[in-house]
Length: 265
Length: 265
Image (cartoon, rainbow over the protein chains, first blue to last red):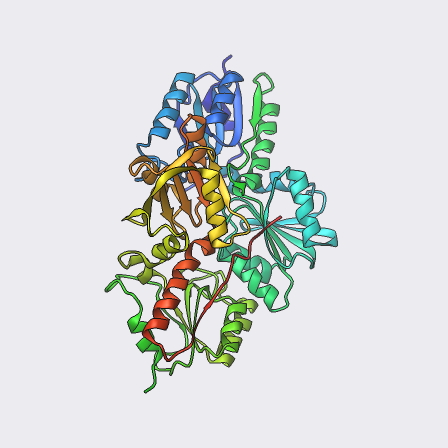
């Protein structure tokens, strides 16, 4: 019996009925029979080509295919030639692409955050989920720079961006994946949850980094590490790919790594 | 005769009446007599202390003092201890802080963009202002990586982030300061203004960088350089400080450099 795209979607961790969501088929149809599944942080042009060459015809992407969060809005990729070439390739490859963003974040616990905790080997430590973040208590305090080294090494990152006092002892660690590094989420974690160090994906450069700089200037040792949006969310999509593999043992499932295109110069 | 804070504000380049603006006194009053003026990208705790030690009592800051664009909103720094300590210092120093953000951007040409053009020594090249950006035509094409080196060297940057094809020849360069690096502004610059390379301050990591990565994968050599929000806008505030100095020759004016708190690890 054929497994359809809709059969797979129906088995993805979900958060019930959401008022509004970006999760939807970006291309293709739910009726297509699935021959292989690719899972990734983002359906880049190269990732879709790789998926096609591996025989996959369903691509589950955390972020949007056409360069903005709310697809179909004005401006942005609307009618760009880069988008047109991409659309033509997707059509010729018969690739169905499903954007899977809000449901994994709204699931309990947040699947994407859980993936990062697992990748950092911190699920075994005391931890709790607090709103859009998680808070981990390490068995003993470590310097911010040592934690940065651990994060880079576990996630195979070429670099990360850091602010604040990296020599201070950190034991309570906040984790805010994706674009959750802004002041509105981060500052209450420092002030109410007493995190010493926050790991975030991405966030406005002059909110949390400036808060942490001011805190350090006031003699209050707080640290902030920006992993990058992709680095913070890819482990959650890797976890998802393993869950799909387990649920559909007859279908090849491939996790496709799409590290940030941003290199340091 | 005393020069008051309001006298100085009245002489700043303005864009007429704005429907809504974040430009306002964050602390202090317009009636205070000005003894010295500090100008900066951001009124960090350290920058305010430096301004006070230099005898300034008016601080003109491009970005917000309390870690978010719309001050006074919920969450963020609302009642953080870091904000309270900062507020107490500002009060004890008698520092009046004026946020000057929308007017310089809406002025014609955008004062902040003009400052960056000048700092890059590109005002002498053919250039035009297009919406929220500027487009410069270099006298001859240069490789993206050579332009990156020029930018780092002129702006004294420890690093920048780059995406796309850095070996390609670039002659038409887009400039989008501050948080204007997103797809909605950037992609039309590549597609309609035919820029080969875009310099931006900050922007969402998976919009323009992914567009440029897809373009490169399609064999279309486009480059993108992220300077950092502070690095892209500080030169405009430096230009402003010189304009104020010229207008008020009797008052000491200090430009205070506040490079990004984000270091690479």
